[in-house]
Image (tube, rainbow, N blue to C red; front, side, top):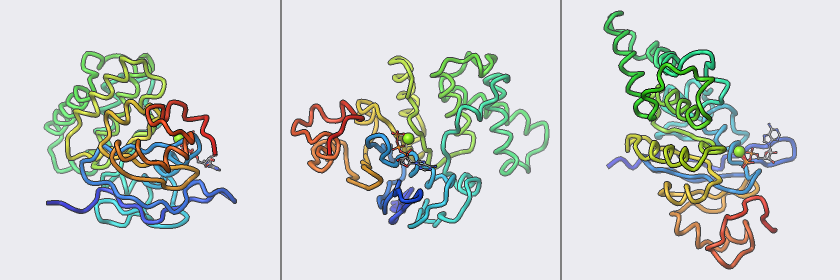
Length: 263
Ligand SMILES: Nc1ncnc2c1ncn2[C@@H]1O[C@H](COP(=O)(O)OP(=O)(O)OP(=O)(O)O)[C@@H](O)[C@H]1O
Ligand SMILES: [Mg+2]
């Protein structure tokens, strides 16, 4: 059995001037987990993802991915090790089709790992791979549409396909369903459910119905600090979490208003 965590954070910190945006956070994520990171606005969730993906170098602590210390590695070297975040909208080529966007990503990836294939076979293989990815994110039938003409939800699906082209072992999604309709959210959930079991998925999410539905494990951050990592049940029933969010006694109301927590 593989017991090496997909991710281990040891006292990871990020300071912005006097602000401790991420303050000595430690937790692990088991391989293949669907792991959510939640917390009120400004808790440090996106900053933590930046430290995991290598957009920023932590000002303290260690980031260990698949048993390897990646703390000092830049983003592209973490991508090469399978640590991949979804990219911002601007990373899509809006005046190119859905298929071309995925093909560009597949070609970029192939530059490293498929260079031994013969050119023609390689071209077909790349195209097949792109089609496969488009099907995986339920965008078949939309291949010829310009990325700029896709709906908001479809663009997020395309971003996932572009990320999947990098063959992630640890996929980081920052608020993937923000701004999506209920139908788009349901489709996105199905997409995450259908990802290969061995792909570890971490997502930051404010939609707690989705979190408790999708995630096997949940980390709660508050004011940069780690409050708890546990099962959805453990998180729901944690008094510490309740008081951090609402000071509420009634867990059924927990997290209904993530912006109005009392101190
Ligand atoms: N580049 C930066 N420079 C200075 N302060 C920053 C920077 N980025 C984030 N912060 C601050 O760090 C804290 C954590 O921000 P972060 O964006 O990580 O929170 P978050 O949990 O993702 O919040 P949200 O739910 O609103 O997305 C906030 O107080 C934020 O203002
Ligand atoms: Mg954020």
